[in-house]
Image 1: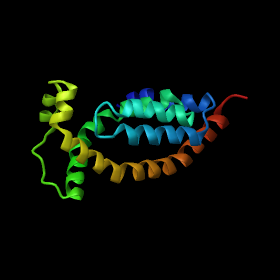
Image 2: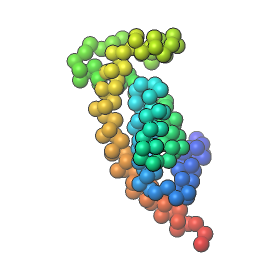
Image 3: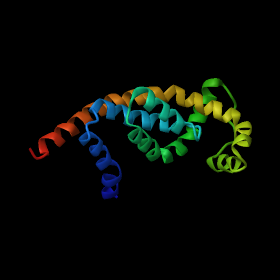
Length: 159
């Protein structure tokens, strides 16, 4: 398992540092990819992250890779984000499960949006309360990690 993580996650990140991506930029790519990648509305994170990456001149491949890697976490967090949004807005809890949501989604995107509009709004509110702060904390935490990784790479590279 650790070998898979090293090959699929660690090595690509180190490769980006070797290519000259600044540690702060890479930390921002990782934090935004993870945070926005967990936005609880399916299909929103990819175009949103593409626009953010182009606007901020970030590495598009890195930001999308992280978003793709957090996809399973995104699915797991949809219901908790929805419950938080319901609680904040004072709404009654909706009888929603991941399975029911996927079944509704299989009927078509427009049908799903109309049917689950309240759930989408509640989940979005839940993410808005947590997501930006989580992105900021993750970004600030990753900066020293990426700087250390770059120092390790430069000190171990042949001269």
